[in-house]
Length: 516
Image 1: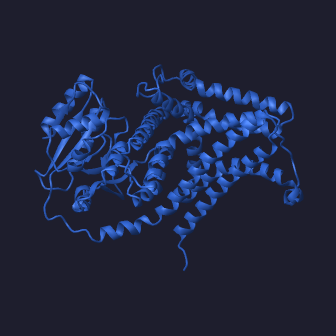
Image 2: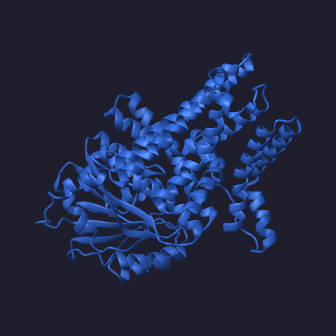
Image 3: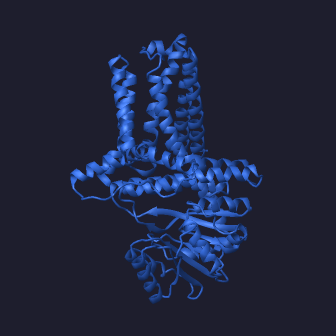
């Protein structure tokens, strides 16, 4: 039986991730083999731990890639049994707002009100937590003119979840549809397409694809973060009944929310709600279709704030998940547990593990670990096996760069955006790590305190770039200094290795300067 191109691509992806994983394990074996003394032993053990963590994520990622191929068939089997609604249930269409541009909110709200659904069955709510009085007053007046139910809280407790829970206390619709303030409706059939899935009483929510509108090269590259998640991870998780409710562009059954006790009031309430839904044995669905387009992320500062919030929330989520398991209230299958653990650790992996790999690389370069050159003939001879293991380290380093770029080229038709995504992971590593630490220390959930004031002149922009990425620049300076030192003591390959890391972490300053 011949496989089609999609299956071949996914199998190739698994092979690439497998080679990357084996390369890391191979270099770990080399570290163990040449270790002499306590320092080298500790270095080898540390590298093994990091290799195992990275390997676990690589294997999980390859499984997600492969499983996602089968989701279309799974969803079609469900869709074939759907029938048009005999009774139109009531739906609350909710748009949470917090000190946003009123004109943008109003424009998207008016477009949202063109949804195809019987009048009187769909009720529109603006959940305004704005603390700026002029913004709140304009949105209140707009809502009054257009028959929108305006809800304003004087104290913004519980973040977005608090606003949604306030809606639950003051409404009685059977379903809740949520859209972000910046999402522009592009398909008016959102309700009529998705509500039939709820004929299955076990379904608590249906999530669709979230996508940004087209923008600049930078914003389109940022969109690939979403693209990978919704193209591969969501479908694979949906097969395990662990599709994540993504906060908007989805519909939730009111009775399910009531049973759960509303939205857990955390920074990323959607992930916490998804877990609680699964614990209560509800089912969920992911429909890979775009119904609204979000405003593109045009500046590096916007991306930093978003990633701070995600990483802070994911760190909270891991603690929440483990606490549930500890108290025996998990109630999840082993596969579902793996899905939630990897989701919670995902950004932490991309940040903390990248930084730890960098630090361990410094220690390796400055240690007594021998790095040697060899011929092809020596490489093929069994007696040079430990040196072969060293080659695995170089292979793992090269693949860590090329695999994500090649995947972006294959699945999203752009190698240049793949390079940008690769650089973004290093540029955001320190910010993500700081967010995780802030969450562990239970500090404020507010985003990174980056200064954005000052005249928009080239000189000021450079100074603000340096100031706001000073930690990344210090890290870059240290790596560069150590890299040149390694070269002066004739450790050319190790020196170039550290200089390359220095370039990657300097990307934060360059991106802040270029994109603001």
